[in-house]
Length: 386
Image (cartoon, rainbow, N blue to C red; front, side, top):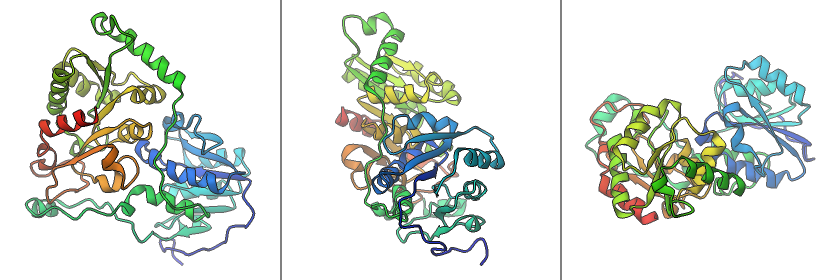
């Protein structure tokens, strides 16, 4: 059988509960949050097993105190596959590995790590490294990048039919956990941050505010978040001037509100531009927060206005409602929260041109998916949640 072929069950799992399980985690923040329902179901299925999560170092703090796992192992940026496999062997022995990413490398790591049972999706160039290569699930929708010709042809067409809730990415990970006997029913993604961390973040935040903003009160009565970046590319970014316009209008309605402008180190200029164009009570935090600090501050926010990116998923998993302009991507496939319940708890906005979702990094035409979402519509969504 060629390495690219899908396989059925090659080696059955033992009936006894495995003592030590390694879960190879995914590599991006939003995807990691979407794996939490599968990890919760896995913990239900294996209450007595010791579950170790192997994750990139940049995501390690996401898992502090998470009830679904017992231990975190980290992969440094640029760490090679042989080094990762050696790390697995040193930490072992493990009885079973659940490989969540679809890459050949992630399966190879567990094979070289000498884990006897290795479960993951059947994908080209990696099936020989798995003892159970799971065929794609029937409800799976491939997020294929549309060609420029397709985008131009579909731009003026009717909106594409929305995928069903069962097509959401959360179900991809749940299906893998179900291969180990876990229940496949979805749960809301969950992230944990301690009350003490939230309290400390609030104290630090107040210390950074101008005296007139914090005087006479324990803190601003209404803290709102704004996350204008998106690493994937400009097609996922609602225009910066519109973020600033929303902030100005909401502050006109709620003069004592405070906007926290979040972003990574690469978003510094973008966030500073928005903070300057927004009211005086906007604080640029780009590149100034660790992942745990970001989690605590998102928990403080009444609402987060954000593009489709990692902090969107994180805020929703922490219980903070989100307002999201969707353009090149699909809320039905990768939106925040529990599929089928998303639009009740959050406001997921789309202008629904015929060419969306295209899954492209940059728009090859006129960016109508994002420019078609007005400031007024987004302001209304924020105010509804406030």
